[in-house]
Amino acid sequence: MNEPITSKGQVYDTSSIRALDLSHHMHPFADQQELVSEGGVRVITRGEGVYLWDSEGERLLDGMGGLWCINIGYGRKELVEAAARQMEELPYYNTFFKTTTPVAAELAAEIASISPNGLDRIFYSNSGSEANDTNIRLARLYWTRLGRPERKAIISRHNAYHGSSIGSGSLTGFDDMHDIAGVPIADVHHAPAPFWWRDGRGQTVEEHCAWALDRLEETILHVGPENVAAFIGEPVQGAGGVLTPPPGYWQGVQEICRRYDILLICDEVICGFGRTGQWFGSQTYAIEPDIITTAKGLSSGYLPISASVFGGRVASVLMDKPGRMNHGYTCSGHPVAAAVALENIRILKRERIVERVGEEIGPYFQARLRELLDHPLVGEVRGVGLMAAVELTRDKEGRTPIEPVSSLATSVRNLCFKTGLTTRAVRDSLVFSPPLVISKDEIDWLVKRLRDNLNQFVG
Figure 1 (tube, rainbow, N blue to C red):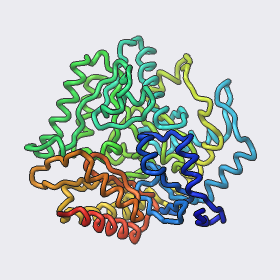
Figure 2 (figure 1 turned 180 degrees about the horizontal axis):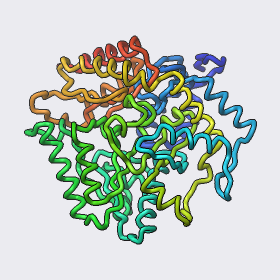
Figure 3 (figure 1 turned 120 degrees about the vertical axis):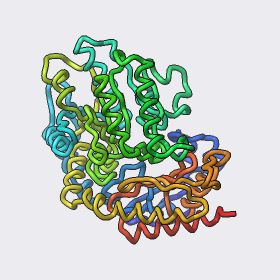
Figure 4 (figure 1 turned 90 degrees about the horizontal axis):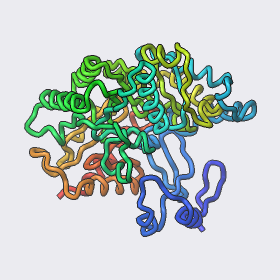
């Protein structure tokens, strides 16, 4: 029996936990038989700051911040205490039946105080997927209330990630997410997004940006502007490979949406709450959305909670006039999750964590990663704030994709995990999204470990 000890003195039997997991737990985005052939999964038992420990006592620097979400780091006792206080006072009540809770109302006001473009109305869900399902309903109901029910099409983009439910998975722009009948749902369409490294060969960055905007407008014209309810996009396409928009791209998107009177939805599930160096990616890229999607960093991943945030144009139709939206979730505005999210935002404000990302640690992270451009396997480093991708290649000049796709990146990722660094492989890139509280010394270690691991694949 393996007997690593956690900070709480807990002893874990790794083999027993793996056996239970393989027998009963179906993992997301996993081939279960592959997990069986590998003898089971790694068992993560605790976290502190930017670090994780597994059941064998091995420490990892979490270069992915959980799943793009542990913004204030692991082990923040303030969030534990906020949850405990709320559990003692009121562990649950719904927000149906003309009721609310103090903390749900307080959190709504707090989100409104930091949201971009004057957005100040909040609808709670439990995940980014649920919030984007809600956004489909918000956009279509908006046009229905205006007497234009034919305006129901949603334009998304290739390489977009907006969730994995039937609705939000339809918005997601990966073919392998559409592998079951009926997905994508009707009236969801995808346009190309700018991805200069892969799709812009023979073009300047400016030319590729113009190409992507032209394709977006073509898609709208093909569907018919009179049929389009909304366009949805992430300020930076996170799970698509940290695809940062070229200069002028978002301004062009906004001009197109305004020209055809289309609602603009910004999916801030990854970019929100400091990841890009401002509270929201919309602010970083001067976007003026009608609706934003929030989740992940809203509670730093400590409890499930998400929100659709809207105002002005949408609120004037959906909230400032009579009419009911027949939509909601059992745990919409869950008081314990709301209490944790409220304290999370207060910590981000009190410790100036967002400002630190924008002014100090984000620029340092980007500069250190860009030093890897001298490595023979690194073709591009892209990112903003504390999110980045390191694009791997064996052909810097021609940018020829590696075959099979993701083979090199996956091998490097696996070595990183073995040597104490978590990252994620997306096609031929390694992506990073560490906790916003990461230090310069920890960034130095991350970059050195990545370089050392890349060296193992040269030749």
